[in-house]
Figure (cartoon, helix red, strand yellow):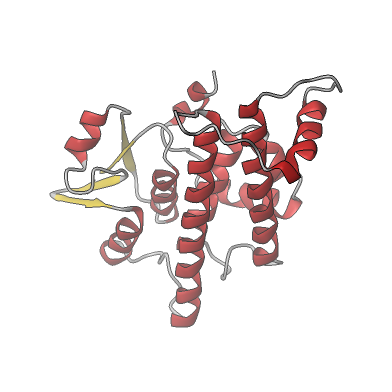
Length: 235
């Protein structure tokens, strides 16, 4: 059985797990947030995920998916059509880069460190304040700077959700009728947005029926989230 080494909340591990599920490859999760474990499991890059397959250890989510396609070619994670495969790879790279950008900004907003105390964009300030007031069902809430910064990031992330709706169109999956590497990255991102600690992430998806139906389709293929203790990060 393959082993997937990950932290409790890692969108790139979600991506690899989805790829394993598409290929119907059973795997064991090995989960730790201890930095010493991460260094031991991934001594070269110091980052997770890492997949262990017998004597092989592969780091980096994109490299892992390439390895899986070479070692276990059916079903493929990329189209046999080279142009479609290139589009799927490009979609994967876009989803990875976009989500990492917003994820890092969200973490900075939610858990600020010294020097991370920049105010929300003044042009969005009142709009964001109204959104917070409505989320609490009252008009006299004085939002905290952390809430304002977080909502500013989520406002921009919502725009990327609209981009996904446009890119998916009427297809069942991105750039194909079967799930591919593009879907591993997009669904991995959406799963974290929906189930993770981002404020109103599930609502963001539910308000876009095209994405909500897409998530349901992918959930049928990959029902098990990585590190099933996502909920513990919200408690």
